[in-house]
Image (cartoon, rainbow, N blue to C red; front, side):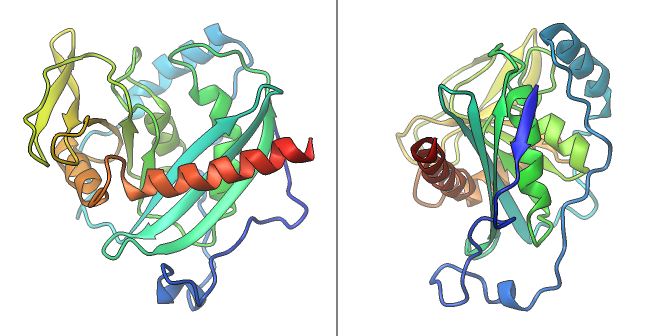
Length: 260
């Protein structure tokens, strides 16, 4: 079970017009919010959660929307404290300039146990609360976790994509499945397979640096997912979406722990 706290301000900080990495459209857009495509089910026990993943996996679409054109992209990340406190951050970027367009956060607590393959159920309520506090609707979600490279082919990126109806990608730091090492050059890839099925790719975002592991979440092809992740990582191993969401998440968690 997870409970989500409503911050007293209702929002985290909003990016300011004079911030150097803020897109000018931030201050003149109409307010939009992420609306869920379906009501989330949040089982309290691992057996029911695994059964839900099995049931929802057939909803995943592994092809591009028509046309596959993305103007904004959101990075999502979560962090935990030993107390059970959980925080989630969403950072929306302009996909061409990588300027920050919007941010939102949420705090909560989780009692769902730590079970590999079921981490989504520790993160979903707080992550969804943060998404619903955005003032813009992103065209693409990039999750710090797995998509179909998952024991039941339904990782966090799939779950968020199906619930929101938005195209989504999983970008993981560790591989689930089997894959060879990609060549050392930036942009090199190697397929990730499970029982002979391709479920993702190891993608080298920087020369000679450990790859990231990309898998489809929902409403996107693997080719497009890899191209988008590579474009989002011009300087570092991790895409800018993940880097900025992670930074915001860590800051919020420190503040949450300090406040008790």
